Length: 213
Image 1 (spheres, rainbow, N blue to C red):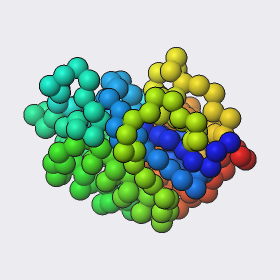
Image 2: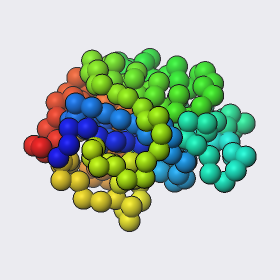
Image 3: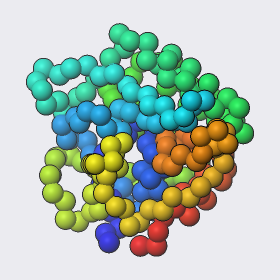
Image 4: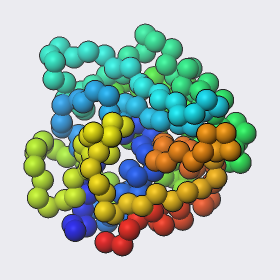
């Protein structure tokens, strides 16, 4: 296994995604690919009062069908920020650590950041900062379909099961979830689910989820 990993950009990435940020020495985030719809690039899944809830950032349509991810603009004609934050607050306001971390996340739902990658990178850094984890993250300068010198998870950490592939380096670790008594444990949600429910134990659980490489 390589000690370098290639990931897509992600909106509040999954627990599996964040395990890669802690499990590799060198993290590379794809910054040159064409935008892929219905992926975690602009979507996250949280645990609401009625079960899994998907939140999607609307994006502007490019001048062509294929839009480079680093040029993709967020569409603010919809009140998605208000709706997303309302959903996050409703889902996690009774979680043990929501009040502790909410102020680090809330600002991203009050200001308009032009590009999707800028938004994703910013909120990801804020989350890593709360965890006091500072991985070495770089961004691609050109696109390569096939990669030989890094473990490539760009398209396999995906909300659709048919797109997923077995990940020998990740194991699901169960933890406390507010609504688990009602719906059971839901795996691999957004990192917010782990952070708001487990707080300072977030890093420990992520590290436990990493299968020895």
